[in-house]
Length: 588
Ligand code: ADP
Ligand code: MG
Image 1 (cartoon, helix red, strand yellow):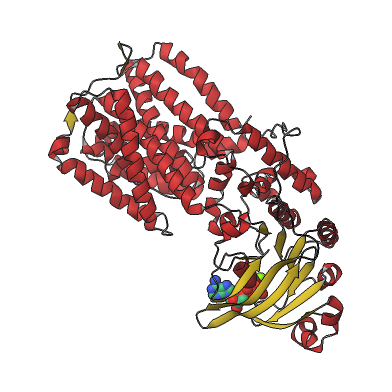
Image 2: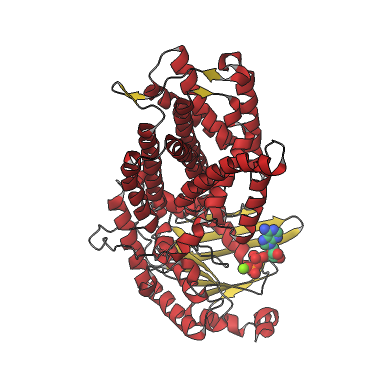
């Protein structure tokens, strides 16, 4: 079992014990705050730590949950258990709207947009008469179940921490699943994820939504815990503080949320007393201390405090329980010799530079076609045009009888065209097996909810079986549980090929698979390519190693300065004076 999860179960066992211990009420109240804050931070772990999207606006979503239950219970007498779901609904709507507008933008727009969202909601809450303006709403009831008052003490502690633990387990389950792998691929940029058939935009909205829902539940709890709501708890300052907590605790870890929330809450209380005594006047000096602490943590411990613990923990290998799983279904492959790919005058201009200048060639099933040419000739750009990673200035691509010219790369990958990258793109903190399983994304369908609830195990086993099979197929059976980031270049490139094979491709595009490989590894790669060809695979290969190219390719296409110089059999190309002049002569 995953270590983080083991610790969560230990925590779950500790909750009833803590509730029964004769702790002073003050400490129970502290723990209640910590549980509430940690729930918000849990969302930030998913959104910021895993997904790489920074939000300063989580406090606003806490506010939506809190104000919804406050207003409805006070004005309509609705049961707080029902208002929880109304709050979640309103939160979902606002998160989807804010997300849909901002998540297509790149870089700093999202953090800025979340600041704007946090501020505007704060002023809205503070200016609406119905919401009591800056005084807020007072006199809420505490929660009760079946006539038993949950109050603000031990029972509330059990409720809050049970929700927190359930959220943590759901999150850990999610991260270790088909949608989870997709979410973990977001941070590395969209190109690889989209090439695996993943809609990165959809997943960004999804994690923004999940994080907002966690915050909303915390708001609902907070309202009935404090029995009053007012805007100050949901403003930008609090939004920043939630991010502080998550980052200082370790925003990449579920446990970072809990540790960070605990630390900041305790420190906050301590500093509010200690600092005025030290300085002699009162004021929010603790904010300055937090700012300094944040800078120091980011500089010296960028992965937060929990990373110190996580590094020390052993990583138990995954239980291999998938040997009897059903194989994933496969697509029908083209018959040998059938036309698989027809490139017709594709062209790409970057401003004044014509990187790919009306290139045309065909590829037939079972053949290996080599695309060669000096650096900067436009080979990778041609790959990106074929696979849909870049839009074409003009020209057409036909794949297995279908015009795919204007399809995005995730649609093309669904049709069975898989690729690797000139610069390896992987998820370094995931195992080789999981990285490869990402390639099978389009061959499954389990979603976020089934993954959180762990009802996806049958499909997960099928993924893992497939990933293991593809790794063994290319001689990487010994690396299954290695972290991908620890691999040297050769195995990394092979891992990318295994990942591409996991998509059950009819056409494989390999961009410089031998770059950075040692001689022995190159021999093994040649072996793998010939074996794949023997199994009927069609391959388009960009490669600089001429021995490898001449050995494995059936046909060569030579590019220079974006233009097609010539094409023919390896023997013809070797004999061509033009090619020698342009390319081979400079290389050898
Ligand atoms: P190759 O893979 O054959 O080495 P590339 O396809 O990577 O060549 O590059 C072809 C040309 O296009 C180069 O001059 C490169 O600088 C240019 N180029 C590639 N990508 C871009 C881009 N995104 N924007 C502008 N120019 C680019
Ligand atoms: Mg290239």
